[in-house]
Image (cartoon, rainbow, N blue to C red):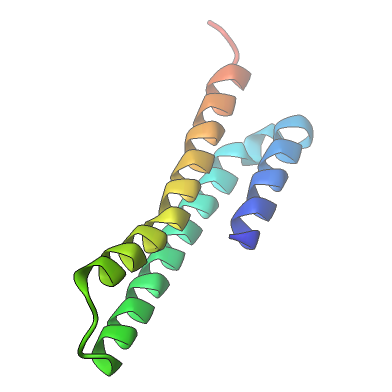
Length: 91
């Protein structure tokens, strides 16, 4: 999550200093969020494999926490697209 926050700050700075990098930084944030989601899924599978008696509410809570980075990365990507639309020259 810290890396995603740093990417969001870089996105805001790029909108001011280097507008051509806005969409690319948004894509990096989206891919980072998906990567963190996959790492969370791996950790959930590891915990389930070692603990046979887990309740479904514990697993559902882990899945809910696993989805947070992908949602955050998607929001950063959405902000980058909005910034890109605002910065585009009008015809």
